Length: 612
Image (cartoon, rainbow, N blue to C red; front, side, top):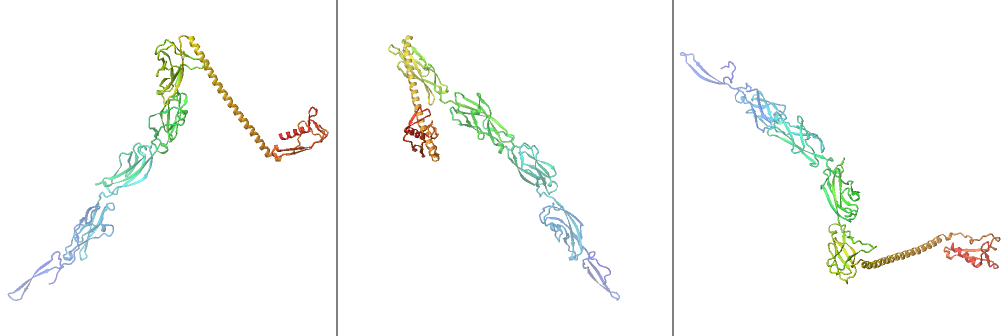
């Protein structure tokens, strides 16, 4: 059997033939046999893909072994010649690291991390090959589907850490740029700040925001803000990021000092010590540092024509109010002034407060008796007739006390009386009344000593002498009290002269002591002077007064020689002189009216030298 033309197994894989053998006899006999011819396959067909281009999608961050697509190829050969193996033929890019294919079934799966932000699509070249080395190829376009897997990134472009509290509205504090690598809705970003703060965000451009002031700033209310800026995208689920900015509010002098009270009242007792601390005013300033440093100033004013600064002073640092002088309740019972509190800002702010000082009375004044008037010139006597009944009003002691309150409550007591059984004094009103009936035996001249005492602590008192005449006629009264006046004047004069004599004697004694001390001091100084200068004194001839030394022709008939010895103590000086025996007297002056013996002359010379 000879093959007449090529066989194609893919068209006919077997051939059935009937081979008939005919002999040459007659009848001709034949025999037949069936021949089955099997066409053996040879690798004459390459694999052929069903599609030349495949399209698929995959979400980013898809887990590994996620099936992306499946390719299919056919090879009409059979057996090993028809077995197809699939592979990815890409030699560049990340495709081989991200995708894998099952060589048997052609399924393409994820083997790496798909990131939309790195590549939004991939092109895979898939090759199908049989064992005979015949191949075919196709393309797979894989589109990556973005998911919201990136948070917005906040970048601070410019930042201010401090802002003044008087900054205007919409003052820019910080510039912010926000980036989101996602796309579409996932990449759209909205930013906001925390609530209840005077700041807001304004979008100046795409993904650019400005943090600006959105209200009044007050450092005294809030000295700083923690501003939290949060940016979120519109993906599902939404992702966000935030950053916290701290902004400090700087102080400006916008608050005046405020006193603790709207007004102050204090009291101080009279007769106080100058410099006494009365009380303290205090003001607080809500500002900071130098703007909050408060100084206290006493405002100029006058009290009854007197500057208030002569009454009180205020410490500039502490606000302590001191009394400048001692107060007298009887002169001034209280006064008001104003104290100003001023801060150290520029310009300074201030406020003032009214201060009222009340002087408290002390019992420093004794009662003053207005009636009866006490006079040393004459004696005033109250006349009580002898017919006066019990309770007869003799007189009334009138007294006042310039103090106030209980210090001015007066009580009257009878301290001494010529006859205590005859008179009494009203405790509260000072009325002097008779206690019993006046009789003829009662003395005409009655002397009452009334004590007026106040109710202070300690109490003070005054004494008044009331002269009472118990008589029915004025001549009787006059005779009695004339003698009394004379005796009183005599006693007063005697006391005066005794005091004067004592003063004169004391003065003379003091003068004598001073004179004695002066003399002793003078002599001591004189001796000290000669002691220091006596050794250097020159020897000078001494001539008594009215003498003239003219040799033998003058007043003296002879020339005398003197020997003078001086020591540092003038009392021990010595003088020697010689004289002629024939001469016994000399003339003292040119007129010759006086003469001295030589002995007298020597004594005179010695005395003169001692005086020197």
